[in-house]
Image (cartoon, rainbow, N blue to C red; front, side, top):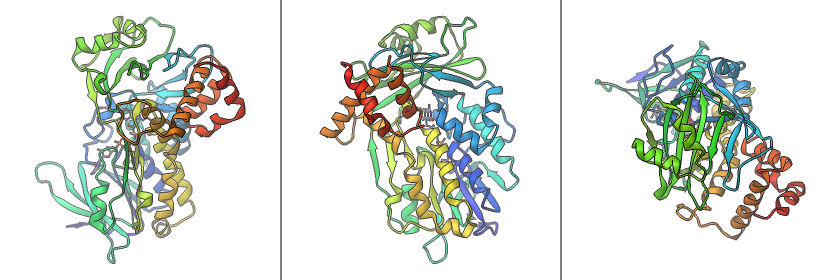
Length: 448
Ligand SMILES: Cc1cc2nc3c(=O)[nH]c(=O)nc-3n(C[C@H](O)[C@H](O)[C@H](O)COP(=O)(O)OP(=O)(O)OC[C@H]3O[C@@H](n4cnc5c(N)ncnc54)[C@H](O)[C@@H]3O)c2cc1C
């Protein structure tokens, strides 16, 4: 069954996560109608709540300053709204206890991030984006494939199935389709169905596991807002405490390979006590748990290189985690999604719906550049660990890793290096900026 008579001036976004919502907001500038199709049930006006389609939301999610700026540019005033609802701005490392893989950060300034539950962030974004009359949410529908336009060189829409007992199948016509289906994206299966070769996915897996739990934020001020005890190749286990809305702490323990953190309470607390510093476990002894521990394990870095696919169909775009997903410890996925939405806005500015569809390949190439810095940071670090699956680092990579270790060690106490380091970590500047003679001289002066 075909639903509706929408065509070229209708855009469909598949997935109502951060990437999909921001893409819908941008497309609404150029299309008469935008439909966001989401398989989860997202009742209008509902309070922030967990949903099965985004299982990562129960784990620490920070939004670096670059992402905060992008979000506010796309949805003016949204950051203020989030702050009013309990999101916390954390100046890192000034207001954090932060043990890096080298040493504690002390006496240096860095960047800031917004710490907020993913549930509150998404609910706020959803409300702001769906506020526009031209954007409609079609929830409880799972997209099952792409539909080619007659002739086969362009996207004609999507096939979908209603969730629930009847599982009714239908299709929606659209001139442009943006796939924002996240980490579990089925795009590689969908492309051959419309005559496109499946894209190659680059994969580097450090076998990192998360186990997280909510706590009531203690009334007594511990003298810091957040805490991060990082692992290193000698002790590949760490933990992080961040303040979130609802006067809560979200606490995530992190480990690699044989060191993945457990979920059983006693073992989880014992894991917290086994980190490189006892400070995190000490902080938890005074705090009241509000939930059980939950785990997340699928954390590989994966980059689906759709920009290299020959015969890319007119009207198809891929964004967010469906395009590239990172080891989450660096906290970059949402920031990259927000930057991609800004790049999308720039690429389609001034064009009508037909031209937006016709320029899809060019736009996709521009989007493919967005994950580069975050990918370099995550994979550069992950390939240090012997248990990581992926290409073995060559000599050049090892030299870069050694240099980065020196930069990090210097950043612990040198304000100039720390400033440059956090500009890169927050994705405000490119990693190459750490190679300037000024930074190199300060980094190399130090012994590791
Ligand atoms: C454990 C963990 C911790 C993280 N921590 C951070 C962090 O600190 N900071 C940060 O910036 N990023 C973090 N990330 C990354 C972040 O979650 C993502 O990058 C971000 O959510 C953008 O994702 P997205 O919108 O592309 O996908 P998602 O948020 O996963 O949304 C995809 C949406 O598509 C829907 N969907 C999927 N398939 C279909 C279909 N066939 N039909 C209809 N709907 C469909 C899903 O239900 C879901 O709603 C973390 C990730 C993980 C796994």
